[in-house]
Image (cartoon, rainbow, N blue to C red; front, side, top):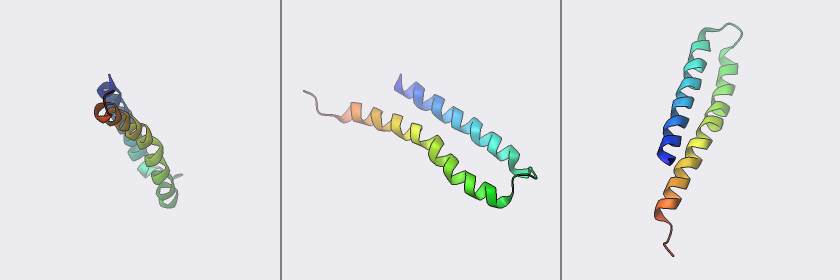
Length: 65
């Protein structure tokens, strides 16, 4: 189940980055704005992926009672 969440989250992030890449040539989105948007976009998109992977590792390696 958790691996499915990882796959889905990476698929969604790939779709978002694909749309971000298509707007590269947009005239209203200057180089400076893209430079500011990208770090924020990466943090927002990658945080759920990292959280799911952290939960998987925590469940795998936690001490057994």
